[in-house]
Length: 171
Image (cartoon, rainbow, N blue to C red; front, side, top):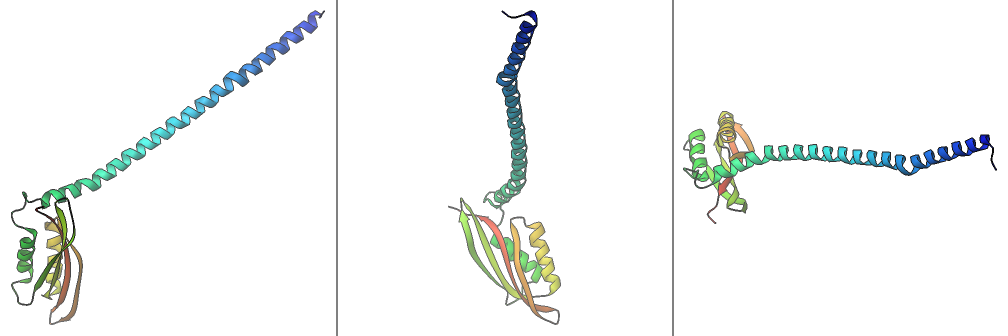
């Protein structure tokens, strides 16, 4: 049989093999599983932070749009956008001959339409700046899309301007 010294070697080797087998079959897979789950949890938290940032960005974009749509609804308007625009142009440019306003629909859906007003007439640079400021700052569902002042002689020139506005439709 085996001597005491050989038995100790066999027992020591067996214990060493059992320890290595334990590490290989139990501990290392457990550590790997822990790291994998930790990465998944970190990824989930990153995704949650990204979703929160997107929701916050959406809210910042959607709230002003919702307010614009609310302001264009028929119940909040005392005068239609066309009338507001005509009065505003009359106040800034004066009631002069040769001012033409051409209204057209650009886009329409869900009881809200995007309209365009093509303005042509004579104006001074001061009047143009004043009109742009009044439209852009005081009439929220309206924006000046483009404008061009040419042939300025004697303080006035030919003005062509596009003004876009939202308006509620009756459909």
